Length: 158
Image (tube, rainbow, N blue to C red; front, side, top):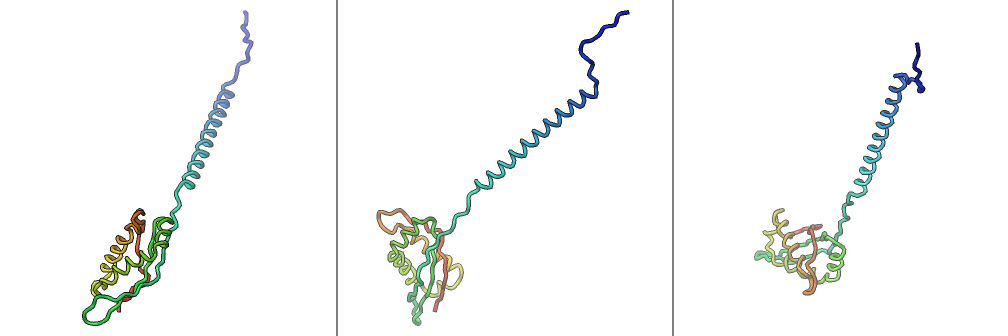
């Protein structure tokens, strides 16, 4: 009887299974590492790409003292104001045209009745009127101001 001999030795099934496990483990490890580094890069980018909140710009004005429109006796208003502006350009314009700014505010304040300055709602209305008056251009050739808020730092009606 003749026996047929193979030139290649037979590979046992255990070594094929081990080889498949090694390849599968290496593939999973590579996929996990790729996911981890991708997540870390995207996470780092989103943290640095998030815009930083802008530092607010305030322009503090010297306090105003004006006589009020009262029939019974002399009344006055002492008020301190700080303006919150959108940018440095507006801040520079307000400082450059400070006499015009103060004149607009004085005109608004001096025409008040003392009874119209008592409640918080009255003060909010006054702040809105000041904001509207100051956001108009300070000179004919300039664009409107960018004042975002009028803040009271002192408010006394006597």
